[in-house]
Length: 523
Image (cartoon, rainbow, N blue to C red; front, side):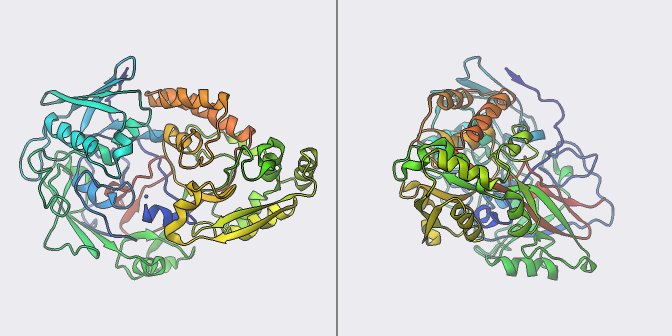
């Protein structure tokens, strides 16, 4: 199958919710004008008085810039400016060309061939050739690191000529194109990839270089634009400064004072007389009551679908949106994100708030008097713990909360110690989104619960390499999970972004990947 390499499509993208913003910042396209392409593959026309510098902030220090240790969170605001990626997300999250002009899979999905565009050079002047990406991917597949899981299906890489990359797989990997639009798609220079200073002095083919003299590790990272970049006209800023501001209140104050030009408004309020415009970005992050013990290993009641459905009916999602989320967000009964191509609007009507219905289901299942559960109280759930606890109490489920230190948050989920947990999630492509939650060995399936029908759907989704063909399969998985109440999703929150006069921010739901291309100049 061949992927169209025609002009790129305008992105609608998303970022994590206010309630989950901390997760994005500890883990986490285009600021474009109307006649500019989302990948920057056409020229932009900035007004003559437009700003030429950009200052933004992240809450944690990047972990390094060698390609084996790149992180897909806010670290990418720096490294994605330094390195070209082979592809980037386009409309509805589907991949579109970047450094690779086109690509095609073999019929069995076991071979992916990519074709590099001409005219790309590294910041040291070397031309970008297929052997560079072969070296990059070879190193990723042979080095234990944070990206190892994303290349586990790669069996070999070939570079038959300077513009052709051939990747062979041991089994089809439906998430691989999505991964190529992130860290594993970054292209390093074969001659410098193993240098000792690669983590601090990276050589990439991206639109910017890291200014070593102006950069202070752990404090700020300064990027200077390359005028010789193959698509320089798409990048309006001559200098980009990424500041590290760990405290969310301090970050918002930096926005209000003008220290940064674009940033999150954590408080939910802003004085627009300061020249800052607030924009609500929907589909920012999911808050989900995970029903982990679906086979009743710890709590036998949870093996009964009627009990799981009762839990869903007992949650007043609309009230939570208005109260806890201050009206910013959407009440949801599904894990698929609003404004994405696998979101099924009518699924949100499956479990309207109905306390009597919930109690009836509990009685039918033999639990009219309820039962007791212990749940973890984690850093990302504390605002929801009281209201969720009350909702469960209303149908006889008594919750004991275990306070979990921030550093043990993930362990609380994978330990199989807790039958339920409130957990935040960010947007991901359909194969990764559903695979990470419901496959037998998924991180969010600590009891390894399976169902033959669901497993068959997930297996087909995980081996369908055509992103568009994944859409109907993902909708089937989504529908099955909701109808069988494997979880009780609550709210998909919004993110409030403040933008100073002269700047724009174009992040939305389906392209949440942090990149300087999210930021632009006002027309």
